[in-house]
Image (cartoon, rainbow, N blue to C red; front, side, top):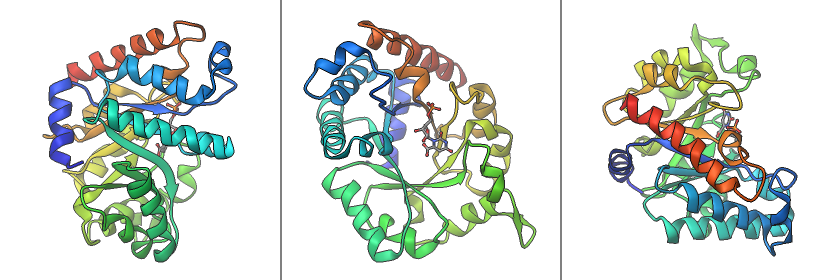
Length: 269
Ligand code: OMP
């Protein structure tokens, strides 16, 4: 998907909500466990209930891989359903990959060609040759971890090298890569005050911002420092939406939570 199409969708839906599909079988309503594919049944219900409110969906690959072959089948069904049912939405494979060039190329093939995702999350630690193979895919986006939402982010990402924090090196250096216009960046909602600095380096890039809801990040702060002319934000909530309800009406409750966030976003647009 081209960035222009994402921006048009955001303006049309008046939302920059990303729904995270982090499906844990121990948390989904128990009646779904009788379904032949409980994970897909859960995702389908969530997608059906929220796709007019969300502009992006982010299946976190760990939650599928944890269930082996069956989990991978559920992932395939989920992405195929998203691409067929709501082709306008932006899809993110949250895989946090990163490896030497020829291996990176195979990761890129897996997520862009075989599964047909619009984007994939990538860890920047191994540098240029681990990232550029993803950028060779036209109209696909690579979402680099810049400043993550977890407490461990301070172990390395904010340390200084040559007087500059490492997450700033990630932002600056990556803008020199071939096809860097296809890069987006992860900045955690729990680090909203850093967005001012992030925007000085990448004023026009889209930022994927996880960490509102369950991790305590503030939507207001993120919007204050992160919004740009094209909106430039995708704000993810996973547990806060998908596990808000626990019984037969879980999808309706998920919709209510998604609507709450969408209305708050609309107010900041
Ligand atoms: P909730 O805390 O349940 O909303 O889920 C957050 C989702 O975003 C999970 O899938 C995380 O793996 C992911 N995430 C973070 O929480 N923090 C980050 O810094 C980066 C990500 C991510 O890349 O999406």
